[in-house]
Length: 355
Image (cartoon, rainbow, N blue to C red):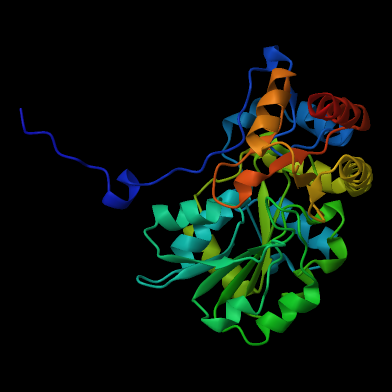
């Protein structure tokens, strides 16, 4: 028998993988507010469409480019069909961006803190990266992207996990001078920041990609569909490196149906935003420090109780929120916004443990 050989690439062997929000057993009946899932669920039209398409056609491969979905996205957002790509969640698009646009030896940059999947993908592809530190207020400074520009940069807007929002004007000011590819990740923008979307800028700037997802405002986490906007040369390049049949047939059907009921999405996003503002104001009354969040979550800390202690105490009360152990963010917990009744329950539990 040959001697054992380590087959794993060195950079993968030392990789700290992305850690998603904990998924409890549904039978545990935990109030799950740790993964920014949409409490209102998808449009009823989605469920109707899925039921009507569960038939013998499932033996066939799905459309490899999700053409009907791309056409629907282009129609809803007022762009050309060759300015849209769809994938197995926006996470797959992030991976595609690394393998499509980053030459060997080039550096990628993103803020700290931000969505940690950018770092995970850099580590997977063995790409060096640079953090751009945010200030004490966690606000993102787009001028920092210009101080030592790199081949590729990511900016999450609203930022995760903080919820802070950049203006479209500040993004455009950066694009006017930035020589690399700028990826603006707008996963949470429907919850109050839609007027600051960078999508209208794609015709003007050939170095801009804008990411979106059906997971958050459209409540389709379980279907795994993401989409991105950019000029045709960027989309054509991404098409070369995507997986062959990367979106399942039913997932495409679900996403199209969700777009067909765009008003339902807007309505649920408004309810979440309203409850976010109410919940934030109630937390402020009992001493919490909050960042001005435009996501479907709040990012908070309390001067008299450590974040991990709050997390553990809420978990004992069968309420699951998100605690991050990394530097700077370990002082905070992130609480996803559920229904109003759910947030009343969370508020009562927090008041009880602070009493």
